[in-house]
Length: 190
Image: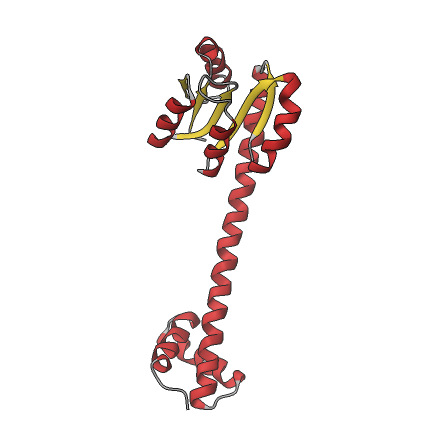
């Protein structure tokens, strides 16, 4: 995980830095949402910690913007408000924790965030693989349809034609299908 940006009252900066430093996170501190937005635009952060309320806003919008830009966000607020605020921010992916925050809570939360990031990365990788397979199937289907339309082949014959062309040319079936598409794409339909 990249660095941590901590936003909140200056008197708590060192304490929060120490909490996240204990978990191996390098931290930078800001006093206001405006200052935090400027720091976030420079990049290098994986986590935003908002110690609400801030001087120029409560901190909800900042946390939501951080999540929308791909960061993890934790909003710290007074314990009596935490459940109510969490109900509104969970749908955005912001974690809400009651103050005061102990080192153990911070470490546990960071472990949860890392585990969630790992799961999300696996899902994204699987999504990329499935998207690639669907795209290949779409290209093969389009080539088979063009062969059926222009060369009068059945679907099975068109499939064998593409596979044979791929083996003979030592290229992938997708590349062979793309060659078929390029051949017939500019032709007019009968």
